[in-house]
Image 1 (tube, rainbow, N blue to C red):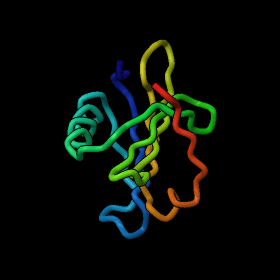
Image 2: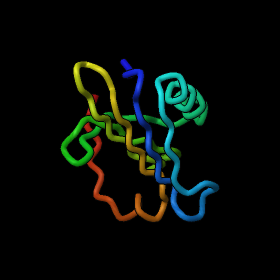
Image 3: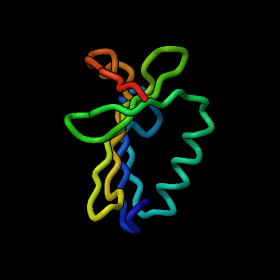
Image 4: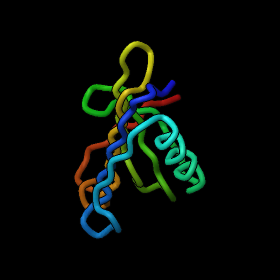
Length: 97
C-alpha cells in the first residue's frame, strides 16, 4: 500500500518534543505506523479537507487527524496533525464504519 518514496509529515505542536517531523520511505513510515498502533487509540475513517483520512481518539477526545494522498493505488503522502491546541479548534466529523 505504501509507495517506496512515501513521505509522512507530522505536526505535533509546539509543546511536543520535535514539534514537527518528516519521515521518508516505506520502511520508515511503516515503522512509525507500528509505533503509533501501540498507543491504544480508537481510529475511525474520516474526510480530511475532502480526502481520505482518519481521526484517532483516546478516551473519547481527539488525539490526531491524518490525511492520505494516494496515487496509482499507493499511499504517497501522509499528513498528521496531533497538536492538541489546533485539534480542539477543528470541527471533526467522523464517518461511520
